[in-house]
Length: 282
Image (tube, rainbow, N blue to C red; front, side):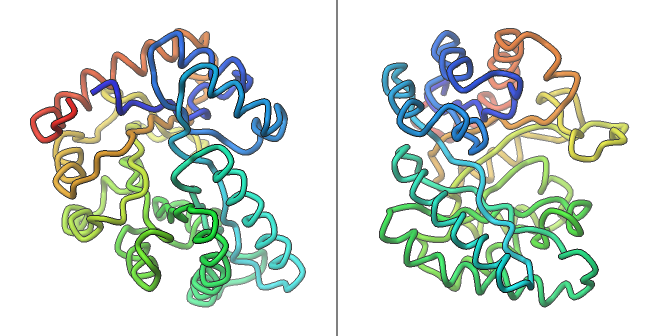
């Protein structure tokens, strides 16, 4: 089961790109989810060499999206940046580009209009993604992020959009932190069979921190019931990497190797046991 574990780079946010890659290798983690900011800081070619030398694979590139703007110039710039992100993902050998679609533009209250612009942007980007062999992975975010980060809040909304495109080019991300609360989540996970581009895992902390962006915790530190969600994803036939993606200031303050050790431990405690009966690779 360790063969499917991936460390999303933001979980060890204070680590540089080389430190994150080397830390995964030391811990026996076979995959890494890469973020574009440290990628650009270290360089694409240097990152690719380092990943290959460490014997890792890239489970995803994060992130594209943020194309809900109604300003024509900003829209063109966003689409151009997403095309660059698609090319980066292809060069890294990542199967997907994670998309955080964007919130409401400043002063704009037209939520349906913002969602239509998401569909329009995907229609423009899909041919480029197809040529590069990259899946555009729509990530629904918890509704508390709807205004400023993602106007797509549920897995059902993401699938309604994705199903208008070829399954190889537009998929969805199932992130436990964002979907655990949804009363329709198990039906929607089953509906997502064949379109799950990434499975991300972290816990929901209670009480919720004042900074909502940093409300994630290590598995077992919050209130999410992981086994049913993991079994539902496994039942779709998904056998890709399982990324641990945690935004948490207290966690980030710890030494990187200590964070990674905790990630491995909690993965084995809370995720492996939930999926090992369904997954022949366990």
